[in-house]
Image 1: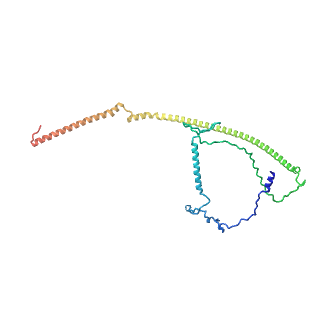
Image 2: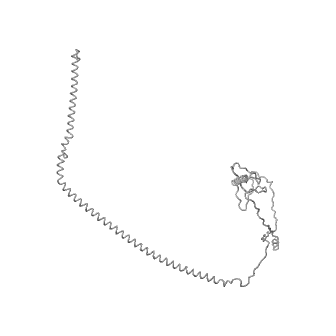
Image 3: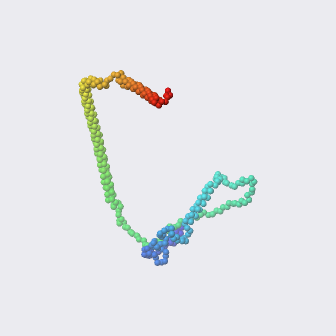
Length: 329
């Protein structure tokens, strides 16, 4: 195996080529070698300009149309899907239980001999064990260049125990200093929190006392306003009572002589009357006058009718005597 690896390393394939510069060409200019490559897209036939409905389709001989290939794949996929669906919908027998198998059984009324059955036999063959292929050797490129070494004598490198002491001292000192600063900061923060807590307690106490005094002052002012309103109401009520008493005394003194004079004046002007006399004047006398007027009207009508009758009789008599005609009466 070792010889095989050494032979593979000695026969490793290597390839080297000299670097070559990239040929320069003018930008946006067609090459003069007769090829169809274009540097300017304005002269490239593959770039479509103008109306796309009238574009020129270049014939391609690389292979069939990808659209047609996609259509064929889609039709093949649909056919496979339909076949799988039919196979899924087709009824089938359940799987046999362990120790049994499915066999073809004749279900006709008359049994027939199956002569077309192919004879089958099982044979076996033993072969040697499969030999694994050896692993491919690791690719190691060919060695190039020259080896170089450096000799370091004792004492040229630094001594860790000596050189690290200042660094450790600085680190420990800085760590202790930083720890002390952090402890002092924590103590200062604790002191500040205690002062702040005391200040907040004092401010809350002062605020509570101020609220209590403000509430007491508000209650005193409210009580003072209520007492003042009560006193004003009492004074207003006393003034109203005095005004009512004075008005009543003035009214009694003024109306003492006014009532008899008013009653006498009302009696003289007819506000106080006899009900029977007023009934006679307002009800009986109008009815009597209407009845008398009706009787007089009837009498006048009777007289007018009598006068018309007498006039007619006199006129008829006059015509009968004046014309010599005998009267019908």
